[in-house]
Image (cartoon, rainbow, N blue to C red; front, side, top):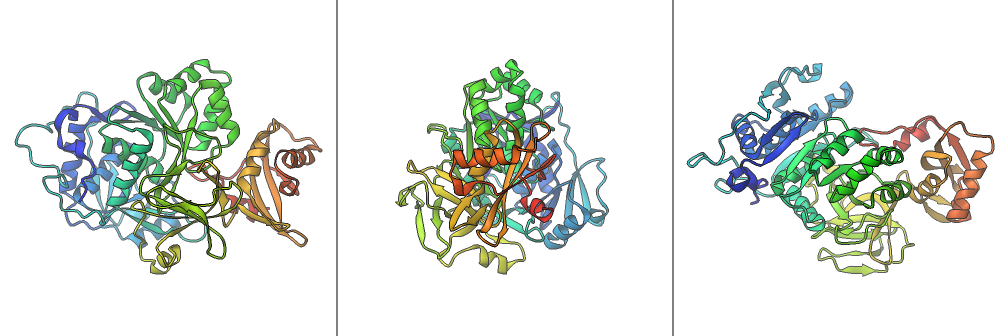
Length: 509
């Protein structure tokens, strides 16, 4: 049995800052008081919904549920009524935890409501660490929760149907966070800054539970801004988490902001995830700051699978090597294995940097099931227990994983070739006339599928720009990867995590 938050039981870190959201903060002592008190009210609650705004209250609510051994269901406050209704019907929470004074949508008003009370100011004093204080629920003094028990139910984005609830066990959270600590040399001395939403794996598990497991600190920006990032890094923050859209904004701002460049240069670690960071932005950030952005790869069902190691060589366009304990293999359509790693990190097969296959993974980081969906759970795993990610990749000669896209939307079969959309997108972004780019395939009577580029241009596109961009890709990569169609847009559709919604592009194409 694993206690997720050793720092909450006192000791030398009791008065260390644990969480800060804007001007409101909690030490470890204060967090233990607030979350421990709330945990006591959740006994026997079944699942609990958490209205996951970027606030101290959300962090305290999730920690309280974990301390009480009650699965938490984070809810995206931007969800529409239909999606929210589906999640509530599917997960059937008995209560909803929410910041006091917040008005909830009609679909949640029938649930018992518990207002999360958090004093959360620099003046508040805590009492953890006082001799004789009762043990925090779920601490080593009362380890009643098996590692396999459900900690969170996190709903997928639902791009191919209604969202599915991935049941995340306690062991997966501990395994992922400890593996990242190994890869990133993450310790209690680190101070993390980010502005990510708290209803998803990236912002919640890595961004809130990660610092708490290490005994370190989180400073949440509330709303991401370059000014906020610079302020926190100049004030002692050591790590920055972000998604590609955030790093793109930083790269754009760096061109005219020397002070921002200095601040980013002070960071020990810059980490990007949730989607691929374009090579162009990698290079701009490194040129301005002297720092390389580290990428990692994971998903809701698997938490983290791979990462560039802090003691390794970050290479734009790759997501590093499997984390400790994670097995990874690339599989052909016929089920044969191309190459991979076993769970001890030993390479298998040919790492040739060319052969494209689906990523399949296994390890303690995996979810246990899709809630109420035994059919979908069975379909997600192979007969020998590997999870099918649906992501396509190659393994470079040095062992790094290079993702080329999603099997459903990013693998284009054209003229007998397997083409990954990601490398074409990176090539397009190298052109000075391209601000944003996405690549899809569409049916073609001759080629099977043709490559289609969706481009947000820098300024008004001239009549010859489409041909110029197609020629640019052909010169940079190979003639068969040339876009056959170039379509210009004002913006690309994205979800809350910054991922481009390619199905929306093709639906409106």
